[in-house]
Length: 288
DNA sequence: AAGATTTGACCCGA
DNA sequence: TCGGGTCAAATCTT
Image (cartoon, rainbow, N blue to C red; front, side, top):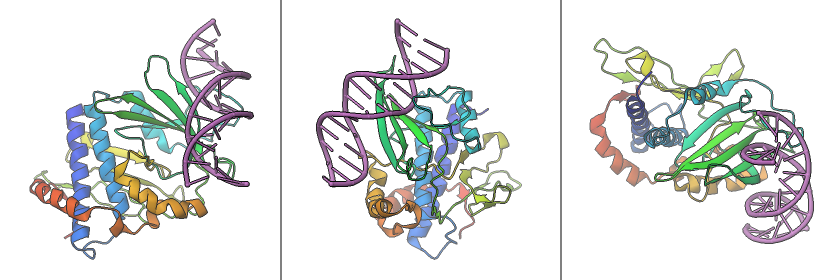
């Protein structure tokens, strides 16, 4: 098991690698194969930094948390929607949790249905269910609660599974493929690409870090319905949300494919920052 | 007016 | 009995 410090370093390194690839794309849109959308790259960057912040904020993930994250792909059916049914904390449908410095954007539309103060916590917990709960009988729910401040850390816990994935058109579903390291063992290669899960017959998303030591692999297993929730505080993604608001309101089209990539980011700012990061060029995406 | 959010009440499990 | 999850009427927003 890696130390928290190592995890933070790896998360940041991975974020850097994603940022570097995004930089390459901004500089020369024709340079890579575009198997990953800019949106997904940006999303990965934010997620890596969120993880790093989460670790640094003295909220180490327990083994239970890690197990629950790794079980995010579990295919257990959603809970029956009996009224006021209390969720057992050990229930396998409590399948994913995220601690991040801002409320988590996951691309789905959620409707808030409750808010409760929680004992021994000064922050209230908000309860959300999928907005398509009625239309598509989608049983996905999530809880969101601030668990720490300075820096703020929000914990989002997902229950059940989205079955409202109608017309989901992830144009850049990607998985990382563990690759061989060179003889010197000093380079780390991350490879992105669409990958169809043959057994499940569906695309799966996620990313992995292929590093020298297997035990140091950061593995972010995410299911297709994990994006970050955009709130008024989530400035990184707010304009993306605005871009997508109209399409989401009229039909259930996921944001990934509908947004003009060139409108997503402050390219100049990003490039300026990346220039200073270049000297840490530790990753090779195979994009030259 | 319709949809989303708020909030007090209700219900269930520990 | 208490804590937490959900309901649903009231209120707010667009």
